[in-house]
Image (tube, rainbow, N blue to C red):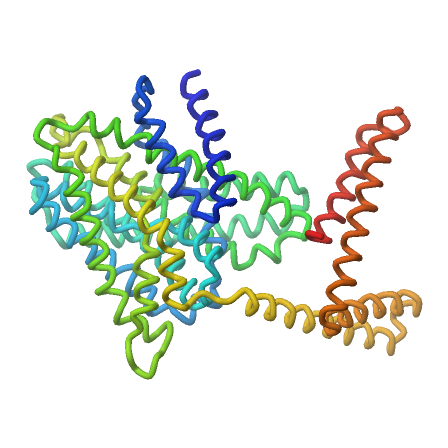
Length: 515
């Protein structure tokens, strides 16, 4: 009951924080971490300890899958070279740099220092995706940041497994070729299982038209990919990412509009709840982890700042040479793109989940040395990046001049709608010439399309007419809803009928958008 109560409290806390974050136009993850810290510092609040595998199994698969599904393969093709370099080269460089720095400034054993490096090499694709949408980054910059963050998680967590295997193998001889082979086996095997799961799910969803079954399949898919890969002793994270990217590419062809709307709504709720709980846990856990540190570890705040500075420096040096591929500027490298890409590399759910999954004991049966300090440093760096980088990223993007103006986005959408309406008119005219449809039906559709085009072209007057039309339709739907409730209250219709008609009214209102 205590665990259930804590989860419910975190959900309520997250909902309140997210509401204020939206009103203040601030990133919710950053505020959630601060809220968690504030709650943890209240006297009498019990210490929070999460089982090592809980976050990795319950939270990571759907969050990674949702981010992978949103990745545009079309845009990815334009930046695949820098993404590949960053997803592999930057991960290895970050892990090595943090590992050497940790040995120097923290006194961790070399094996655990490189476990820490592998943990902190992964960024947070969920926060990156949300920030990119909110800040309206150019397409190539957005896909570079999102794809690099997504794939470097898979790479860094595979590297983390290799590093943990070395750390727990007390007294065993470590072979670099063997470690490299294990890395390839984990990553390659996970990729193959992800492809297989995506293919199987694609075949099943092609033959499914029930929205409930579609929703269940969509929710189960990331867990199936993760569990199958882990059972085969490969990388579950890689499997989830590959399955999500492949299914995201073909998902719109597997379902109708109604099912897609439902899937989107369900996943939005699931992702919000999981993200909210986890980011709150980040703040809640830090004070408890600090209390568990051994004596003599009081320098951890400065050590965490030093490691965060190393991560940022390595990221700057790695991203700057790649900016030519994203935003050519007469052969020169762009500090603006490099600054945004660097500052967008916040740490979040992935490092925390990885750190929590570090085994408690070594193979010899004794406690794993340095585990408590690794957990504290990981959580502190995550808190630093979410709060400092997360809260200041909007200012960095605005100062860089890369953010797209709202007028640009509105103009692009209006031009796209015109193109769609003109294509539809051409098709209607073809049907009319072939007499394939009744003339009255063709004329009605033609008039509706011409009216939409006229409203777009007319400028301010057309915009006013469109707004008035939407406002009136919203009022009519509200009147219909009131009448529907009256019929139900007077027992003139069944509950099934009320639900069906209310659903139809809701769909009409959703299609109208905001008045």
